[in-house]
Image (tube, rainbow, N blue to C red):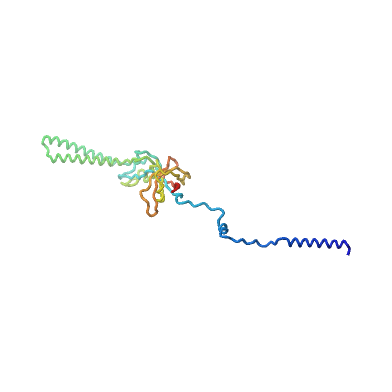
Length: 281
């Protein structure tokens, strides 16, 4: 065999031997080995990476509240008459003592004039009888009857004067007209509601809290109230605490006031108050 053929055979053999040796030396890649799970490992896998926000406790929850006027009332007719004027319209402001309702009281005025005329006649009769009594020209009974007639007519005049004073309703306090229930030139009966009025110079906040909060909520406690309609927060302070605890819900009513005057706030608005117990409570 020629020498160059022998050299080629040796080179091929060496290459094949090196390839087999490298394959034998390489590690076998099998499936990933199983790792035994200890209780601590299992708990770590079950725990989420980031815990969600903690739920607020009872002492930190938000409570619904409503704005209420400091004073409010319904003005009603005290006599049966036709409404002559309603000078302040619904939503309008007024001052204490200002006229809010005027009735047509021409009939009551005529009755007062009649009572005054009757009183004048009775007084003249009584005066004449007094002079006759001095002359012993009239009896004691007739004198007493004329005096009683004077007293009777005086009472009639006073009653008609009181009735006539009901023909004009004035404001008991400064505030605004919340609702107008009747219209001008409408006839109303005694006791019929005419106007709902409120005193909004100071707005109060009414809300319920758990009765156990009485351990730290006292008059003067300051907090913030967020009003839904304005989307703003306002400073407030607890003024009064309810006189009793509701035995079913174990809650008590609190009344607070807004600190300051804010033109955008009106009675009836609602919102949320956030009360947080002081440290250690």
